[in-house]
Length: 287
Image 1 (tube, rainbow, N blue to C red):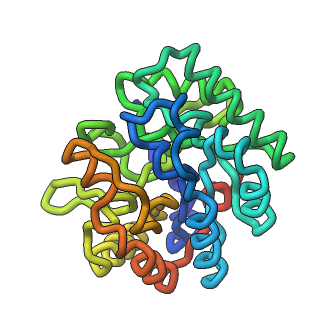
Image 2: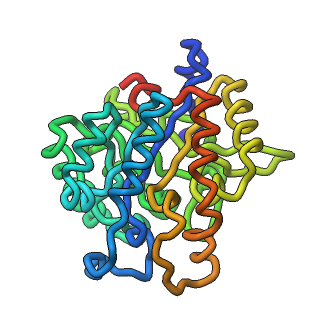
């Protein structure tokens, strides 16, 4: 793994820029026990929750990067077009919400190409960025980076610099860096934000971590990252804005992951948007 850190931000005096990203998926897309072939059996709550996020971003005049499932782009084209027309970046989250290390390279390429085609046909703009479902580009699926570069992706946001039962490469760089370079073509990795406390890497940039940690801690973490001359990366999901989303029986760790503290995310997001400057990833990376 390359340990070269992307130093563009410090050199250009925009260290206070950070990224806000949205994984555009419905509440059941990320539940592993619900197979793809059963997705249409469940109530969709995506549009209402996404429009709420768009209202909040508009209120604070912030543009974000939306990592869109190709499946969502096909099923809700008007929603994705609205996101684009409001000035947000459209990137890809793959077509189906599949864990990358459970795919073959051929299946991953097919899923990626299908998602890119659907999104580019809809938006008439090139897809520059990719985020793996559940951050599942790990040491076991590091081959996926080669596929991303071959398919024209300019930046990736899939490698979590910690280790959990689902994902992570704990010794990977914690700030944006050039992860692959081939004949002058660079693939930039933009990891989700963590901070180091007493030698321990603490995730704080979104999802369960953002819901569980107090707002002051997250604000302190972003400020600390910016003071080090780097951009922070925050990520949210539409189902997190839905405290009344359907509850299904899940193992305890998955139940916590999907349902814990859903009522706090909106206020925490507003707190961050009022305190920091956020931009789409392609603007921070000057792509």
